[in-house]
Image (cartoon, rainbow over all chains, first blue to last red; front, side, top):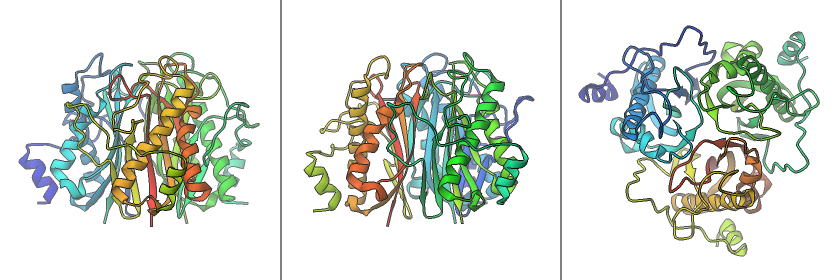
Length: 162
Length: 162
Length: 162
């Protein structure tokens, strides 16, 4: 079994099914877009194993706690890895993480975006290690995010393959 | 005539003039920045054919409907193509779309950012087809955007040339 | 002495110490992430020479004036150059700026994000000149940003090295 998937199994983590969209939502773009060695990953949100978006929904600092946000960011990493596996077939093809843009649905005075997005970064480092998993990052506050009453976290990224 | 421009003509679409800025606005950067094969496209907004920014202005979920937002995103695609044509001279030099970052000026509980930015993605796929036009995307809610009473949509992107 | 550092000295500008984080903040990612010739720079904020984050804090259009915002964006350029120097050792290794994403902590109806982020762009062009310093840019309004009562400006970027 591949290296990264073995680690996921050891951690008891399951990659979710493809995102289940509400019937009126149309997404005319590539969830994962490969151009040469570069892999552009569309904004992902936290999902349940069946592919539905995971709550709690709404804004950090109003509807969602930092601890819940951390878990949602960790789930967002699993959503992204599930999409990457569907496209690349093997997550071990990922040679290096480049850039992670962490968007936190934020009430105006919420300032702990980094503590939320750490749920994503911690899992990426745990799975890929400090060389492959190394990424630059921003963690910032959005006015609103899509889906349901608004997913609390959305993350986009770029990775490299061999 | 070039392939993409022929399609634009067939669709009856006109690329706008360069953006007309208010007299107090200074933009000390490159609207389109070519580095090797990579083309970085600065944030663009919807424009009228004369280059002025197009309304309605303000926030989705407060001042602008989803249908209007879709049209504004489509106009933003035309603004971006106009800038790319001025820099590349020929839009057929575009070999692949990479990443599209769709920013929607959003009231706090507006969640239909994807339906708005579809106005951009739909036109890119219609013009460039599924191989060249394929792009990863995020569509998210900003607290505020510049120009006039605030453009309702702003989009940045990266594309590749040969 | 290196070219860029000589210019900084001539301008009387000092690069700040590494960012001093509050004790409860953990940043598990790379401030600067080099992958081949590409350098991904994490979101930076304005810092004082000792590395502490610089105020005024909070939102443009509510807590911070455009003139103050311009200075904060200029300080953010110095923060970023300090991080790049620590990683690259020599700022003259920077061969070209690619993309600058300027995030302004914004009250809902604030629209002068470009005038704020000009503090960053002006300094980059002054130091690197129009060929190396040339960058694509977005300057947009965030609902919230991290650290203290919220830094007023955060900027991420990508540059190329030889």
